[in-house]
Length: 127
Image (tube, rainbow, N blue to C red; front, side):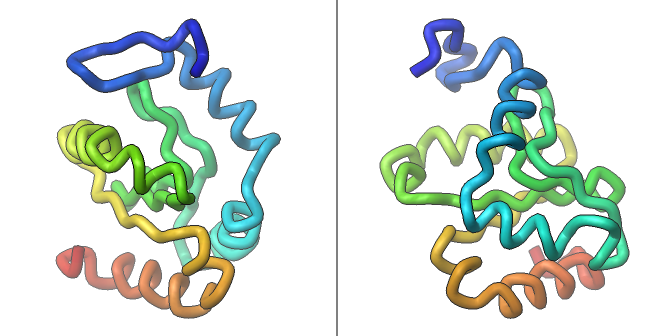
């Protein structure tokens, strides 16, 4: 864990989310690369940003216009479920909806994942 990380209201946060976001953009996982190649350049009709800082956190993908965050979870997230819940609650307080997918979902069935995202963009009440 980064020694510069701090605990704020029992949620581990990074004091430099912009720097962490830059690092994460350089070190994308295969699932992030695959999904980004399909979300970038308004390919679903809206602009997504990758590794987007929001408060003390960094969202994997964010459509600010639609207030939608897409998170890609790997194995480490199974052990950090309570952290993810608090993080999602914070993002919800900022007006964002959070949609989560597992790495293996994106790698195994990218088209289904994209269809789910597209459906949510067309029908935001479905989340």
